[in-house]
Image (cartoon, rainbow, N blue to C red; front, side, top):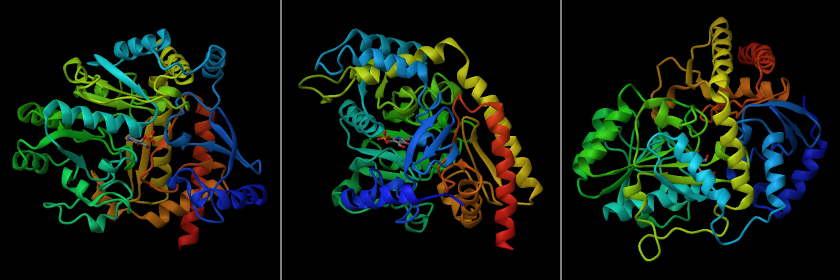
Length: 439
Ligand SMILES: Cc1ncc(COP(=O)(O)O)c(C=O)c1O
């Protein structure tokens, strides 16, 4: 059982001065359970009581190399000595943009921001300005950040509220979003060739953008069906719709060039954040010159005091150099595949019906008999057993992954073969213990 005295004391203080004691709703696990972290190094993290964990949450994806990576920290330390925020372009910023353009297929120009939320917000604005249209297609279960336009039918929305499969209803996530925004969102199930075609045809002339997580980074890492992204590309081409890939989770993680590279589909714009900075806050959106060129004073607004600040650029520069110099992501995928196969063997042995999901660098599993391909299929997933396994792993096994199957298991360069073996041993114990408890 975990020690919790110090964590609880800190969290009690947090509850007095911060809403629910956290800086993101997703971090709140309850009054007596919310973790309080102290430090991280490589693939490990320690909480305020000194409990040690192998980390598969990795800050929900940004840590691509490892916590407190010395190469990135060194670059950041050098940068802060030069000053960080100037309200002007810097040479470092230009170099980072050049490296991204060189690394990502079809990327021609971009702008920097600080969070994924900002990146998707600006990408949508650019798409609306470029097409002079207002609505956009959003896929159920996909998450694009915290601005009003995209808080509909996300991973957190109750499936039971999404309406009929053929005639879905956008479900607003929480209060505080102006009611009329609903009118701009066309939410539909992912991975259905026909439904998306019907939606495009019936809203012809109104749709500015199709906003797509090419791999469902917020639904267990589910992947697109064969040819699905190409189908979306063709629809966007045929109907003059700006295709936006939200690569906030997939970018600089699935491959150096992200999902664009893996699936060979080039969107008009894509958004990046997370792995680009290995934990430092940096984001970007960019794509075709013809589309991005519309941004400018008096034409389309984009700005931000901290955009391309010295810390974020130094971190991104170091990450991009490391990714360019050695096959970090390919090697990670081999270890990720070992983890995946190892967990599958354990689930098979335990007689638990399952589906292994996602890319090895951002994977998951569902406890399910029917194969899931989109969020509604999660109605058949056994949440209770999944949570029991993950709870045991966290409380007894020293392994921290999100206790909710929708959030993938993330790998980083510091997840060595030894760390994977250790995880598999503990996963086996947790699976056996959870099954015993259930029976
Ligand atoms: C696919 C996707 N897009 C956008 C975001 C929002 O990014 P941020 O939390 O940096 O605002 C997230 C965050 O998890 C995400 O998963």
